[in-house]
Every structure is written in structure tokens, then in C-alpha cells.
Length: 391
Image (cartoon, rainbow, N blue to C red; front, side):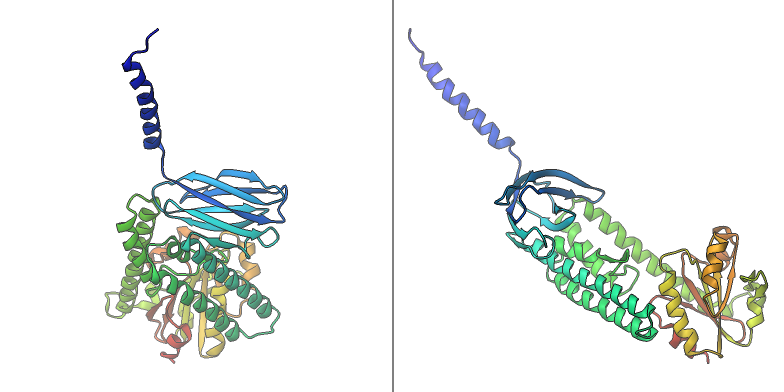
């Protein structure tokens, strides 16, 4: 039987076309590989940490050699991935078609690892260690303060020193490469569930702005880009709103309200159910504070209030209005405070929120001896210094 020339040509050609199509359909990939020592029979997980969720995408049961290799499709924009072993986590930055090599001991997996092939991942390790150090510092200082080993002033100063140390390190990293995943990562680190970089601080927001601007240009398809842009714009709007509110409060003295003490008066019950009026304090400088003890920030905020109160004790009063819904929890907190504590049982339905333009807690004002509101206190203000101006 004769074989046609056409059949001889067609069979290799088909194979070539199939091979070409296969290469064309193959999507860009990245590889994460390495070795975990002393990890025999332990399962290592690879997780993808997207903007909205963290999902397991692969896993491997390690043998006595501890070698592993994961190969995954690149999503087309920078993204975070996690290696997890026995509850310990290594954060990795994947921003291209690359091979990242991670070596670590099982016992101190999250701390003593090395990473090659990804400068962003190496920088993220530095940020994680700095954040861990700050978190540990906070914990130690809190214990010392509660056991009265250090004073209130020493506690606040040491906390601020720790925050400044982290920010200095993080800013060096951020400003060296705005487009890196490490810069994004550094902005959103937290201690005690609070962002270390405060987006409502005029100095800190500049870092958010810089990264958001570069990401908008470099990674327009990344979900993180849109989120960071919206987050930053929202924070800037809030900063402008607060500035406008302060200006409005500072102009109250020239407004149409002729009797400030009457219009802005508050009369609410204290923990003994005795009504106390704000106007009864006229003749003294008053710190008027709106808060809720059930919030996480309350202890730290009251420490700052107490610092000003103790410094000017006898010359000022603090009139603190709580909007807590749980009266018993409020009473248990109020009993430990040295100033006037009252509660509005209407909580968030109170007309005080509108009258004083309260957008969130805590909100603090300073009232002069004439009963006039002269200052809305911002997070960047030194409360003691602002009070001193009126004494």
C-alpha cells in the first residue's frame, strides 16, 4: 500500500499545530519552592490572600527531606500569597513570572526563614518583624503601666517612640519603591487592631496618597488599586471635613447664637442618677468629651484625658458624655474615673450628635470660662497645651 505525500506532511504538521496551540494557551506561571527542615509528615499550605478573602490553593505533605514546590498561574497583577505551617505564616509578594525560594526551620518557620528571588518578599519580612516588635513593646508597656512600674507620661512617651520607630523603618521602605507590594503591605499593618499609619493624620496620609497614585498608574486592573484609591480619597475627605468643623466651631463666638451656655447646655444623669448640667461649670475651663466606654479606643483615650486633668487639676473640669447602650457596663467604667461622667440613654438617637456635629467617637471640645466653645480638639492636638492657653 502506498502512502501519499499529503499524509506524510499532515501528521507532523498536526502535531506541530497541537504543540503550538498548547504553548499559546499556557498562561504565565510562578513557582514557590524550597525546603523546611525537621518537618517530616507536616503539611505545608499555600494560600492566596486576595483583597476580600484568603483561600487555600495547594498543599503538600512534607517528607523527611522537607522539599516542596508549588507552581501556580500568575493573576496578572501583584498579589500576596502565604505559606502556612502549623499555624505559622510567611507572607510572600508575587508580582511577576518568577521563582521564589524559601528555606526555613519547622520550629521557627515564620521568623527564621530566608527568601530569594523576590525582593518584595524580603522587604515584607522586615516589616513583619518590625510590626511584631512594636506589638510586643505595646504589650510589655501595658503590663508595666497597669502594675504601676511606669508613670502615665512614661507610658505614652514610650508608646509614641515605638510607633515612630516602626514608621521610620516603614517610610524608608515605602518611599524607596511606591509600586511594590511591600509598600502596600507596610501601610496596612496593625497593632491591637489599629492601623499604625493613621489615614486621618495629615502626615501619614501622604504615604497613602503616594502609593495610591503610583498603583493607579502601574496596576490599573488590580482590585487593590481601586480599594486603595477609594480608601485614600475617603480619608482625605474626612480630614477636610474635620478641618471645616474646627473652623466652624471656632466661629461660634460670632454666630447668631447669643446665649451659648443655654443653646449648648447639656443636662444628663451621672452614675448616681443625679442630673448635672454643663452650664453649672461656667467660670471654669471645661473639657467636654463625647465617647462610648464600650469601644476599643476608650481606655487609651481616657488615659490622654487623665493626663490633662491631672496636670491642671483644680483649674479645669471634665464633663464626659457617654453614649453607651449598656448602663451597667457604663457605671462600672464611670466609677473609676475622677471627673464628671454622665450618660445619654438615647445613645445614637440623641440630638446632641446633631447639635455638636459629632461624626464619631471620641469627639472633644474645650469650653472657656464664659461657657463658650472655643476649640474642637483634633487627634494631632496636644490637649494639655490647648487647655493651658485658656488658664
